[in-house]
Length: 294
Image 1 (tube, rainbow, N blue to C red):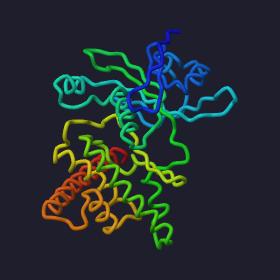
Image 2: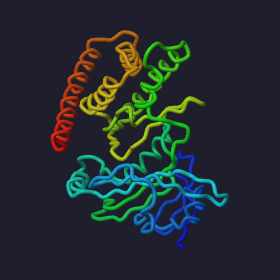
Image 3: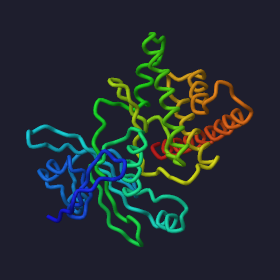
Image 4: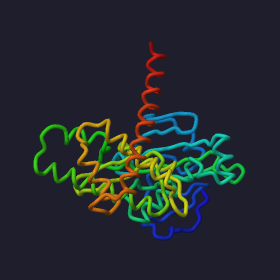
């Protein structure tokens, strides 16, 4: 076993070690070692657990590992493989590669700037042309939390209690704060749908997940901002429990204003237009899937 000295990323609450070609959160070395997963190739070949998603670029599995006391821990293993197009785009600085490397870096960045996200456990890669051709990340499950896509319809449909009115307001304002901080730092998520926000109510906290596509520049462009906000707007229109007042409250908080200016209303108009295009594209995809199933 090859182990280097401890290292702690700047502004990170975590400490890491390089072991057998992977970067490991030191708090999780015992459980990975106990389960024979302190090796990059063994992790990439691990075939246990529940498969959540798979395509030509990513494979996402939930894995239950036992610690020395016999307690189960749910972790998420993401395995990534870059396509040729992504490699070329990254080489010519057309954006970040959608890789484990990018997600790992963004997880650490989000923690450093105070945006709650997953706990990083392990990362490893095989490079080609100085890019993470094959890579993986392991993160800890966000315990006692559910996606806002599930939480909102379950709790805010129909007549609301005073407690739920206050909770919905808090969620709206916290979402606006997270997205504003993201954009103020030149970051855009590129998959900013409500399914990628998780909520824990006790204590109250909202987490952002699936960071492999997050892009960072010195300043976020108007178009990238519109795209992010349109994705969030679209996902709010297909769920029960969100109304026009909620969306207006979000935008005013995001823009840090009590009264919308002409530039603000123009931004909202662009967001709605982009949201409509997302809706048409989504309908087209589901229509194609439905036709294939007939």
